Image 1 (tube, one colour):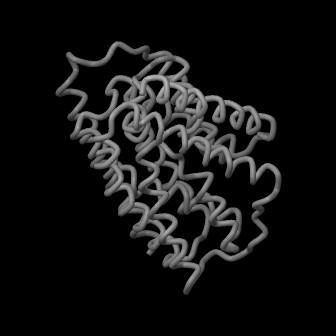
Image 2 (cartoon, rainbow, N blue to C red; image 1 turned 30 degrees about the vertical axis):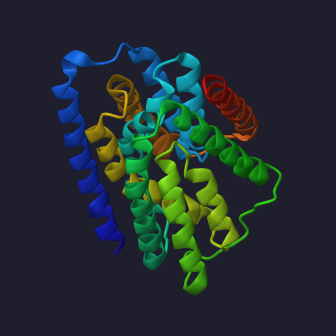
Length: 285
């Protein structure tokens, strides 16, 4: 079963590279006026620390907003498209390295994918003000999970590599919701890690589950963003290419770093960005 999942992820990666490349080539003369350097640095930094467990979407939202590399309306689609290939690579690596019970993986991956399939259509049609409000709330939720983890309110003491019965049912329902929310720019990693801890799974299991969930949901969600034109093409491409390098360095070479202070800094930035997003939405309303 693990080998089948691995092959599906590889096929997803090949297919998505073709879809993205085709859209970029079709619009090569109409790419947005953004910086290759700024977007490249954003993509590299957030995906490097994404592999180490910090998550990419929340800090990426903050950096894109601070550097003004895309409009607020296009941030969800841009992040989903830019991070699809790096996340697929993460999942391809970690699913082979860390053992997870196959049934648990399949249920959580498929429910996340179904949630994103529905969510992408909704988010792509929202106005910029509604996107700001949605992302403001999403960022604050992410900050709440990060703070709970930092204060040891949610801890990973379990040892199980799989779940069954009502726990698996709950995991599937929650992952469906997280998949839908991810298309709005809500990072899945922090809440999914909290879910894994609460259900008694081993902390190590969180990595292939959250990476695999994203890897299954993001290609289809990003495809919808691409087809509806609800993403910044140049910013997405500018972040995607160096992100691949960052993932390979973090996963295969660095593997771990002392990240405690950095997590507090990221938490502060997320809260600040959430407040500014909310203020922008209220002011423009």
